[in-house]
Image 1 (cartoon, rainbow, N blue to C red):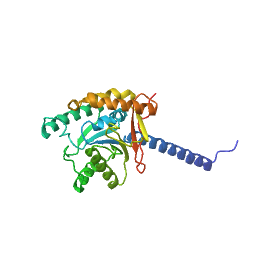
Image 2 (cartoon, rainbow, N blue to C red):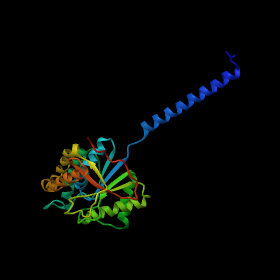
Image 3 (cartoon, rainbow, N blue to C red):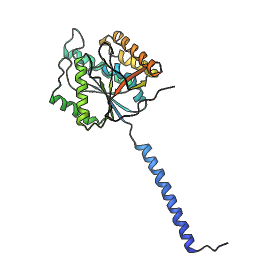
Image 4 (cartoon, rainbow, N blue to C red):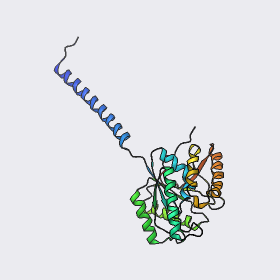
Length: 256
């Protein structure tokens, strides 16, 4: 047996201290990353109350259930949307319906301040819309597809796109469809979200817009949900086109 020297003891203590320090660093880093990393913020931007719910209601519910922060950004309050009511009267009704839908989906409503029937796309409106987006700092935004029969849907798409460009293309950008074949056209999805377990919540959020005859418009979206589900291999799905120059985020996974 070799005698234990002072040099040997010193070397062992240095090695042990280094090992412990390395272990503490690794554990500490893992703890910090798992506990403090925030969930991404998602914005779904629609032209009118009921657009985000019909195009993305199931995806909103899926993200919310995963504890993501979800903001529904309404370009207008649907002022032109109730026959026989003034713009002001319709705005009150439809804003209340939007808030009810957001409660069902566990999202936060934000209104961009434009008026349905008087939507503008100009330099001032670009700046105004971008200011809202900069305040929210989203990780991903879902917006109307630009090839759409409704002028407000097209305006919404342009406002989101301009904000994405001028904010340095930092957030992931996805486009959603509404009433495909009647409004949205030339929509060839790149991504899908399985909404099968939350379809009843999407339906309830859409039916919260009672002033908009949901029995009629949801029939079209029910067919879309089923068709996209067949494409994706599930019962119900929503479909999206990802802007290939934007980052990507993890969409809610397909469920068993």
